[in-house]
Length: 217
Image 1 (cartoon, helix red, strand yellow):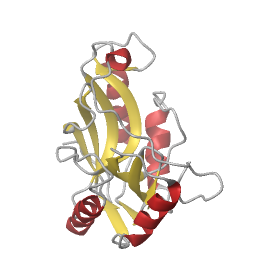
Image 2 (cartoon, rainbow, N blue to C red; image 1 turned 45 degrees about the vertical axis):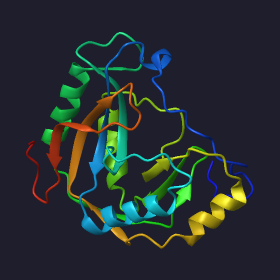
Image 3 (cartoon, rainbow, N blue to C red; image 1 turned 30 degrees about the vertical axis):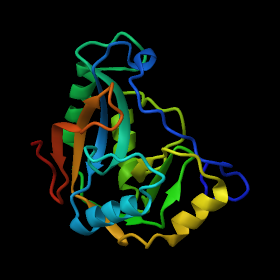
């Protein structure tokens, strides 16, 4: 549910409790996902300015690099035991599929900031279907670990205090519009420390998106 929906949207923000969640990770160290890293200077500047404007509402996250999540894989492990593990064999299969197919850069449209109950974000519109194609390819060999419908976005931050829906809609409307487009030129398989919700992303594999096929870096 989004705050931009005045009928079905949340009534107030959901405050994020920043702590270790042992009941979730159960001793597993790192969590993995495929993402589009954001390196475009105007988009990075916009994210920084928007976070500053919402600083009284959001937990700071200086170490987590801005990105668009494409596909959530699960706990990065050599072998899978639990349903939310992502064993190495599945990662190898995903990489093999990427290697056999040409993937062009994708131009993604950015929209006015919006918010889930838990986090403010910049919506990403996949009008050309690039993200949908990548998700279908990656999902052909692995079930995505997901608790809600997929919404492509750039996270601005998790909420650190409670605010009602009118306040959030007013704050989102007061932000400037983002740059009109984000050009996705690479896919990265990244992991982060499962005990740190705001920790840095570690790039394990980098996949350039080129007009004439791809070569893994």
